[in-house]
Length: 126
Image 1: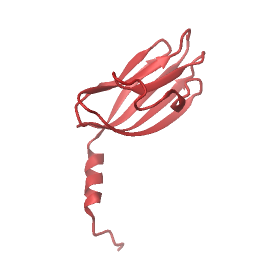
Image 2: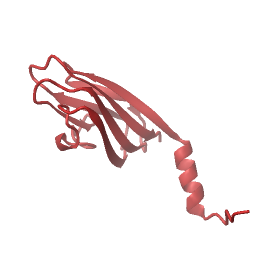
Image 3: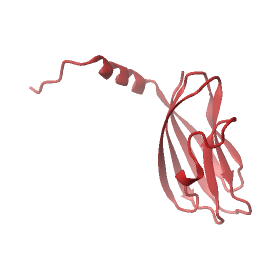
Image 4: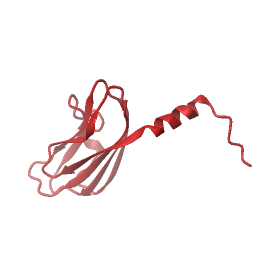
């Protein structure tokens, strides 16, 4: 039988953190400018990671940043995501909210008539 112990306190903290994770989601279309990703988060929530799935690339040069109402690129800047290329974009965040906060995706794509993406946020609600 393999040896599986003893456990150290950090093991329990990691298991506890993963047990409390939730997934927030926001749908972004070509004509959107600001999309909320999930509901507002309470104080001390941890935004662990973001994943953006570009399903249909934009037909014009386009950019997306992800942040909150105070800072539009707090979690991801325009270089993190290419809306003109289909694919998955993974972004590690590990940011803690101060006060009630909403994750927002900000899109800049003037003149676009095609484009679709989904933004996922892995969150530990405070």
